[in-house]
Length: 304
Image 1 (tube, rainbow, N blue to C red):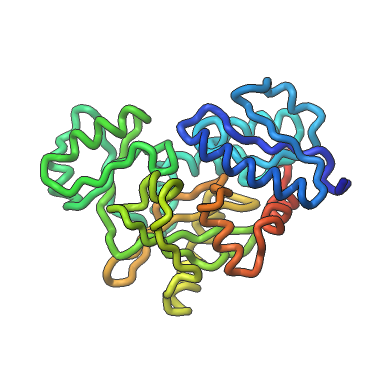
Image 2 (image 1 turned 45 degrees about the horizontal axis):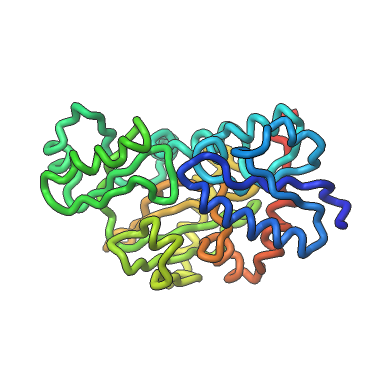
């Protein structure tokens, strides 16, 4: 067994709406680690008590969504003194909250789509007029496009709000930026090649991400070199502004004029066969197992 990492817990599953995706990510990570001789074990916090993490030397976080990507499990690992992959407590908590992430990025001058926060008593017609159509409505603290609706007709915002509100009390409406969907994976101090996502569906929804085989991915994205470099530099800035470390993935949109707008950061990106970070790594010459080992090598305790 590889002694440099010791006994490794691959945290997967959990209790969020992204449990099934997390299980697939974790299985891929676990297989990769074992293939390279790492003493790795699956650990599902929905089944095993967190106290059972005592005795592990490192943790690879393959949990997505609430309690796994929002700073909660990171805090537990800090208390237990176990080095873990990905950003720390604060960056994870901020990254899970799309609204507060936007506030930080806006304050630093990074471009984000125009948006409005919604509640049951909102003037939905006024928001539609202000943001225009199409617009997107989403839970502000969920992932994998769970609860997201694309509104294309006047009067559709209120129903879309109801769908998102089933998943989160904090709901956001965003202006539709329709020039293309992209993502930048960050590994250590490097921005990996940009991926352009071309879904066959109306937008990159849950089915397009995980279930369909007709979503097209272009990596490296077909952008002018200076444009790609500028976006990668901004993505690294977005990552660092949240005090993120280790690895993450920053999603953005482009408009017809070629301006980019950052959407969100994923602090525990997917590692399934359809996932974007492994795709970007391959374009940089890093195969899946090497990517997993690199991420694990960046595991740390974020507090003394």
